[in-house]
Image (cartoon, rainbow, N blue to C red; front, side, top):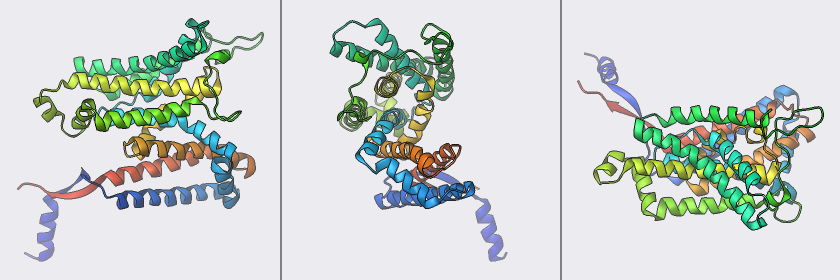
Length: 370
């Protein structure tokens, strides 16, 4: 038997497996993200070149729009607010290996709950009015998360399936409410896919004068701190992390896995619902589906890019908030076609997501029996 035939037999008895890195090195993680930056911008440059636009001028416009002035920085932080919140919602769920894909629907549900609160609590003192609106939005998101958790606990329905289905249901419900239903803004000639403007008393205060930055960004930072304390410093956080590593061992320890799952999904839904509140009452000041579109799905990627850590999620959210803010300048100053902007954002999200996976997992060869 030749050496090559022996090697062939050994190879045939082995297979590749993806394993989670137990303690990934910081240097490796940093390298993967730097590589993602290089690859992402290289692919983006090729895309811009195909449109005939000046690559260097486009990137200069991107930076100027994202961080080139105080006004740009505030706009970036405002754009990042819902991304940070939906990313944090992902962190809470995924750390427990509860694979909720319902952040999109929970954002919509939170916005709808907050708008409902805006209608029924009108006339109260401003501080109470605004507090109840925020609470209503968080409850709206939490209810959706809780329903998915109960379906999983009581009927063993996959949270992936249930949350995706509820995403569609909530979007259709909102489309009815603002597209001809009772919340629709009606003019003399046009029926708009939106509500009328929310009362000034219900709007989140803007920080630093007339900047776009509003109180929602403070909520995002506070939520990140609360998530960190919850996950790292509390008994519930221990249960969440233990569920992520070995739920069977946690059950043998006497922990009620169903109860923990419900709590995880309710908390995750509440944080995602807060993102809907921040976007409607901090930025657009009216309930419109297009302002909420894709915030939840993008937040899932933001949470993954952030390593399922609150601080990493804040950083990733701000980075991609800058990308969204700077993209507008690319269209205006560098004449980059509007159709290329979402493609560019998709490329950057994809490269960073691949980097996040490579930083946390590795491919190993294992020997098969026999």
